[in-house]
Length: 232
Figure 1 (cartoon, one colour):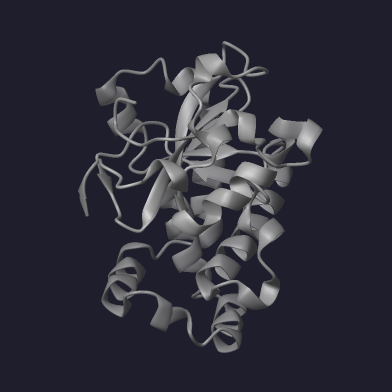
Figure 2: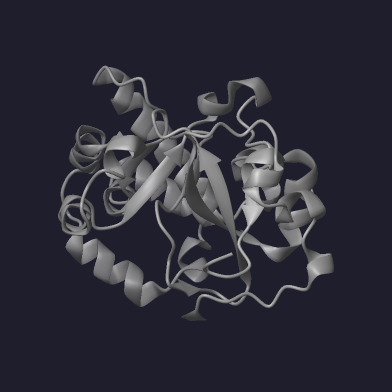
């Protein structure tokens, strides 16, 4: 990890993902920026087709065990959201950061995405992790473990054990806490820095598939830009 900097040559960035916002058409002025990490090899596909949830672009056989768990847990979140009377869903959503991270991985590229702050929501990703860890202790979760034995190999075993010690409540209680706490991105952006820290441990923007209804859940390239430096 190192300070915000990307060593990208100009020919690695597709033209339509390098244009400044003022040079683009069709991006409403009230849309705000959020940030999403992607892999270098994914840029060309994003430039051509836009950005979608990985379940839409990766075959089931090529999904990692971690990705499979997230898909299954998002479905659990959606079931409980529906019972709570919430219209929000995690399945099929693209996740992002509400503000710039000061540290980036060498292998990743940071995308700036324009979203409607009146539709995107912010939740505590820590509760998502808590629910997932706790669900793995249920009968269904243990069966899932048997079907996906490489899950621990893909993740740090010591970290996983520590998380198990920390999150021991019923997974449904964490999901309820999550949905009870989500707020619109518009309201999140009005909070002070201290208010944000006190509200969520790991803030995460959920860009639901319905937000970009005209493109069936895909964030069109016109709403996406590669961040080359922190101030570009």
